Image 1 (tube, rainbow, N blue to C red):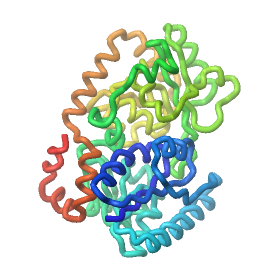
Image 2 (cartoon, rainbow, N blue to C red):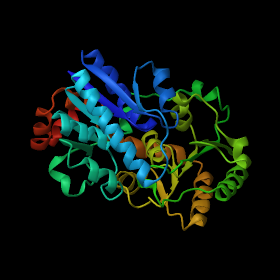
Image 3 (cartoon, helix red, strand yellow):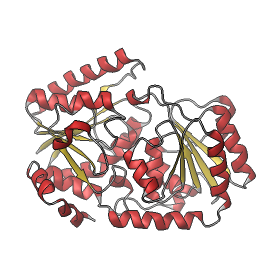
Length: 364
């Protein structure tokens, strides 16, 4: 089978990377498409996969530029599907769904954001895709008939114990201390980030003061440029090593929803400071059901400071969160193994999941 996979973000690439290798090992042809985003191209090059960049220049961050870039990507994907005789398209972007519709090929949309959070993207995607493959907890609005929900999270595709083992030796090449906190600053330039606020420089400086007074080092991971007054704290690493560093951190503070989920997958305490707090079902499940993260609204920075101090004063916090993680893992599946089965047996796999959702738990 000839499979086209499109990834537009480092976290999306991590989601697909193990699947790509297994699908190829099984004799499938996989064509990987990307667009320029943060360190995405470097990550793929380091892993040795070939790819085609269909949006090499970063677009401007305004509605017209976003929509125009989407139309151009769709046109490019349609031509690639025809030229390479693709059988199946998979990805998060509307271009995948639209190109599949226009070429009459099977298109699977993989996301983990709720419809209300990504309404604009969803309205350009869901009418055209064949299947919306998402964590069971995700809401897809009126498109529920297309939804196939699985008991897992996208980040488990690469951070499940079957796929990833934290290596202290890798961490130690950058950070020798066992008492450190990560602060992650996102660019907040995606289409669904319009009007969304996160961590600002003054609040970050206040957090650094609290963390250092508790005896912890601070490292900042940032998308794009870092403010000069924070540059001394910037974490400079091979980006393929970030999850080893995250896994041994005492605490993550972030306005990135993606890294907050990653921390939960690894059993690392996290505080997410964002207007998205309380709005994303995956993170709400991780917070309310598994106690693996805390969301703080941007109108309450004092709460963020207070929780930071409280968590760092709890000497048993790491072991507690590892226990929470163990419970979460016992409920969830190996997402990569499930995805490979789902793709290779599609569309029969849709019927199996609709009729017998418990079938997926053989992949635990």
